[in-house]
Length: 229
Image (cartoon, rainbow, N blue to C red; front, side, top):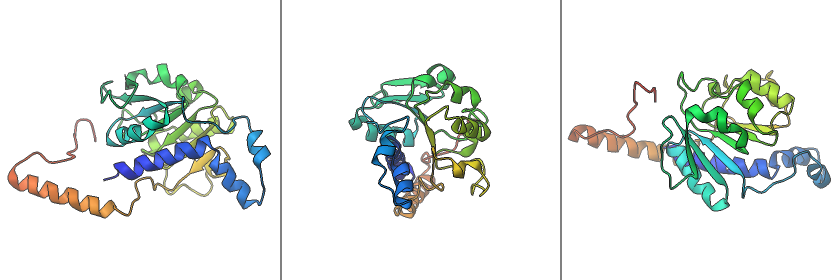
């Protein structure tokens, strides 16, 4: 149901971060033609080609993102629990156990994994400290995958270039959260899955599963109770 709009949302976020669109919006609100200011930032506008994208969670959403990103010339690394996946969509597929070994090589880290006890705070102070100072973290999964206090500290110290958050530990994000005031944070209000086609796709899935149920066939998108998703 959510694969297409979420892949679109992440792709748009990648372009927005690379091209400093959030900065442009802030300068527009201040009525400032800030071409020189944007150029003089520690991280100048960049191209996505040649950048390394680490997609943590290579389910339907991660794979659809890879399909969209491939023509842009990015190096695509995917991470799954087992280290297996569709090798035609990624240059490397890695097991989750190797996260700490490779996160320092990524320019963009996208979280598209489910929330389980194993993924809780999978991005914490250690992982943030290992990331490049020019790297961005993008979370469209669930807020608790990230240690938010550690993220705020890393962003305040500019230990990483920035973060794009569609989800947070507490939603709605409280007005007093420091995340609102950080210039290196791009916040969207848990809308990456929003689409005018949402209910049509949900209806189609429900009808398919009803047909499968009454004909005794395997249902689509069954939850694995052992894995938690």
